[in-house]
Length: 313
View 1: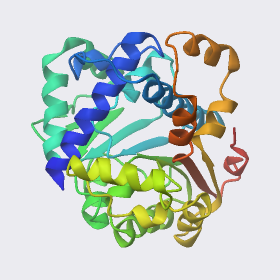
View 2: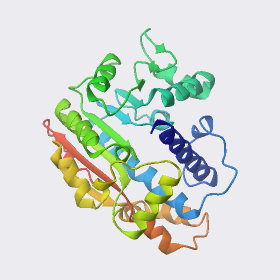
View 3: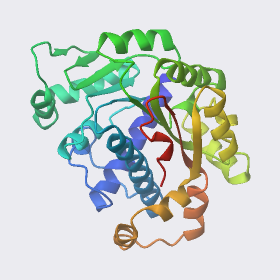
């Protein structure tokens, strides 16, 4: 499973890097984690990635606004994500930003950070105090931590996060992008239940597949299986309702789920027009099908009445 996830993470990185190089959005940090892809990626894939990045980012920024950045973010299965650096550039850093992934993936990310000053410098700039820890499997500064852990073991995860300064009383945003689907339904339920019972004020964002019971969904599953990627939790991706119900059944409130075609329609239309002019899209129907098979779901718990239930597109 780990090797398959690692290869899938690299594949996703290449898609991200290519879309940035064409001009879909700006990310000056992705170049330090992956080389430019040699072959072009299909326009429908690039537009889909654009919608994913902007859709997830919209909800993250809405949470940061509601909490006035007096919060923490836990990015689950973060891989080579560059969100910490991008938030710092926009003066939107939470009180602390945590990333969690398998130790093998964490080791690679830390190696890149240590060897690339444009990555390490912003971490040093945001750090206060003297206890900056960096070894091969973890990094801990006052504003940014990377933790090597297995998301399938909540007690180990909590222990490692607390060791790096997790504050369960602080409003907490958990982000999972194409992560829960690789866990069995029981494993992802345990993780979601742990989060809901640990943080009194929290929000969770989950981006992954949906409507996977139809023929198009079956083709997607077969394509991933050819890359040795087994979607252990795909049964929970049968509909938007099943995605919402999973969150509600595990202690979350005000759960919502929308497919990516809808997200795409909610994004600022001037920018959508700009990116649609970047590449000619021949397969409009394929693009729509693809977008109807991914979704963003989010839910909250808000004992402090910060208005998290009102976050929406």
